Amino acid sequence: MSAPPALHEVLAAVLGIRDGRLRVLLWQRALDPDAGRWALPGGTLGPEEDVESSVRRQLAEKVDVREVAHVEQLSVFSDPARSPGKRRIATAFLGLVPSDADPALPEDTAWHEVDDLPPTAFDHAAIVGSARDRLRAKLSYTNLGFALAPAEFTISALRELYVAALGHAVSATNLQRVLTRRDLLVPTGETAAPGRAGGRPAALFRFTDRSLRVTDAFAVLRPPARPGGPRDGVLP
Amino acid sequence: MSAPPALHEVLAAVLGIRDGRLRVLLWQRALDPDAGRWALPGGTLGPEEDVESSVRRQLAEKVDVREVAHVEQLSVFSDPARSPGKRRIATAFLGLVPSDADPALPEDTAWHEVDDLPPTAFDHAAIVGSARDRLRAKLSYTNLGFALAPAEFTISALRELYVAALGHAVSATNLQRVLTRRDLLVPTGETAAPGRAGGRPAALFRFTDRSLRVTDAFAVLRPPARPGGPRDGVLP
Image (cartoon, rainbow over the protein chains, first blue to last red):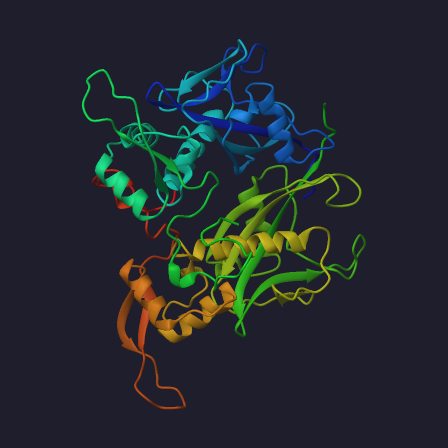
């Protein structure tokens, strides 16, 4: 069973918290197929690039990629019926933008609520769902919150980001306790300017690391420490 | 920058513990390119199939797929120079076979030690390394040991599997403690037949689940329990 050559494309589901909601960056297609529908940034893999360099190149056409705090491969979408015409196989990526980054967007591009998408092109709604599920899963066993949060934040502000990303209530007290106990968060020693309601100024925190690690890998399964070796819990 | 169509292939790094070592299933290429070198099972994506059905079809030519306890996508390997001739883009998978499964293998196929590979074809050694790293990472925050272990085992036998997979020493006492505390392991109530050395018969255990879940997702980040909803910690 030999296959006719297929086009390979890369697609990026870039998520971030905007106005208290988890949103995804989509652009509105001007041309058929699926004219008027909203699509993920991306396009065909170039002859000289691999999928990682391709997704960064293509994202740069829609958003300032310096604002993207984390990018990882999601998975391959390869249903033969996923788009009309010549077969296209897509490598999908998850990208995350901190809530205080405000990248300039082209006219055709906007942030849309992940749980209330406009009409989407092809299988892009399924890719957005896969990105949302990956984010939610990793928030629960890694430090991935760093990629949604500003450099410094109050616990109350961080709680709002987790609530928006997870889609359910989270207690600020419990969030602070579990993230601190696992050495994800450290206090900066500073406090935020008091809000309009006055009251005690709130302590500011930052994430200990701003690259991905598993936050509670079983200690007994860690390799013996080696000078200069990879740190415990750093994802391969 | 428009790309000429490329071939899409799927490749499977099937790992298992054999004779106390972490090994991978490889077949020896009879024809050029890279004749005589050892390669991962796989091949070109068929016109009617997606990558998941393709990898299962192609694996079935090398090994009884009923013996494969877990399969997941690793990532896309897409360096333009990864193979000679027409461009090939590969979706690589990790597969795991329990230590007591003994699938019949074709003549050209054998288990090779992951940390002592024979000469390999193309970029397949890098794919094996990626599979080994994924396995090691997931053993430390999921129940993935179920896919390496027989249905029932003593703690001593399980420790040997973890040592082989992780490549470093693991204490049986600590392993039992952490896996039990996280509800990964349950005693079967039976004991193993005593070894030649005699001594007290050892208790038998099994994994609570034989599908993948994160074993210690932050409890505070779990959604409220819903009747009939997905269970806590189940990977999306």
